[in-house]
Length: 215
Image (cartoon, rainbow, N blue to C red; front, top):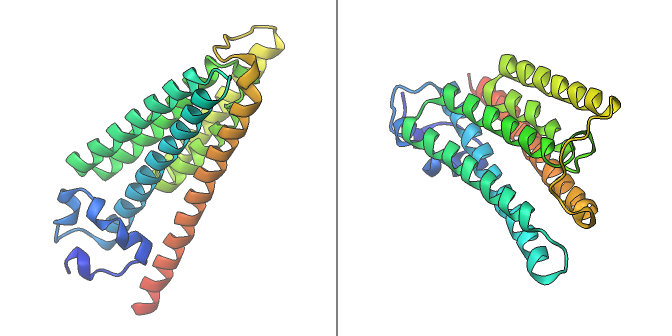
């Protein structure tokens, strides 16, 4: 097979090649499909790191220059950054595409659920970010993992609704005065992640059409 520099690919995909694991970047026997999937996972991981940095900067700014107590959102942003960073380090060092995709999907889902549970459950201002879980899973792990993740999101949503209907209130560690602002920040993060995933998927379709046209 040709070296990775000689393979076809959208410019944006090829721009992440320096960030690919050495075990993938230097693998002359790597299939083109595996290379494309590795580029997609790397794109998603790097974009997720960027989004967590963005949320950290916004929450830190609001914490420092306003009277609102954004200490907990700053902590959450830091934890999310650390988890996503560790996911990327695992992928970079192991070069295991399938397990890395599953690890990221699972860790993203678990973090979302934990944050929702401790910020009001069904009334949580971050609940909408659950929508990103199956979208990300479909993109980086494939159809089967995507359906599993969608089923988990459905179960969590129903469980939160049932708990709310029976009057069981989950804890809320966020101050009431920051909830509207936090909801807007989470909406921005959610929209950004979904748009990024859809954009990468669109690039993937272009990539496949280009490959078919050259055959």
